[in-house]
Image (cartoon, rainbow over all chains, first blue to last red; front, side, top):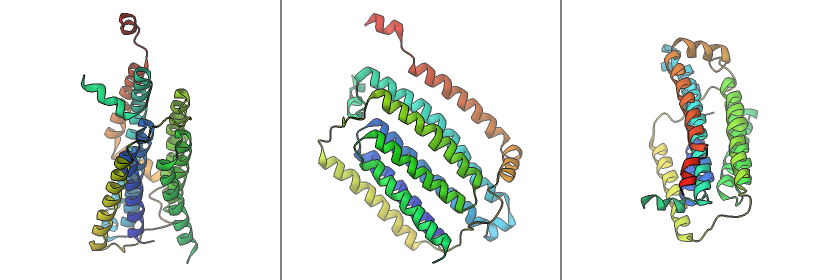
Length: 110
Length: 173
């Protein structure tokens, strides 16, 4: 499979995530769209790592291939930590304003 | 068309279709379930690229742990009713337009790029196996690995601190 199809897949997933963040008002769905964008980047990292398994750079420096996949692992680690804190913040917000609509957050200013 | 190409296009259609369903379905519970389908499709892509460790971690961590956490929060808040007010159609249209424009711009730059027909190794190569990734993780990436444990500890403490009820403040109010 050529790399351009994987780039196209990742770009499409990322842009669906961006459109979701911009159109939806529900804080939980916005958060899920951020997860979607992170996963699009993960797909791209793994595809490039497997591309360099065949390229001259990967032949000269074999650690390039496993580095890309370890970056994905660390992205997943950070995403898990981020989700736990973010959902706690959303629960706290729901407890205070009894809604998860992000439009209610403009009360932050006064 | 070989079997790997058929699998690639099937998994791609599955990922994109369920990702679109995530942002279009009205009920948040349905969005969570569609996102789990997306993660399974992405795991299928990882397996096709022989990144088996990442495929398993993706299923266990994302589809297993994170999405269950989302599902718990959605069900705790009782949001399965259609509670989202959709008044501003103009704003929605602008958001879709912005996402579509970003997609077109990146795709157009991809058309101009060179070497986009390099092949991706499918179904072979042992770099994505647990043995090799574990060796790389515990030789070259020991420090980031340990720092991520500190990150998890602080995230855990932060979640508990944010999530617990503040008794004194509620009494004061």
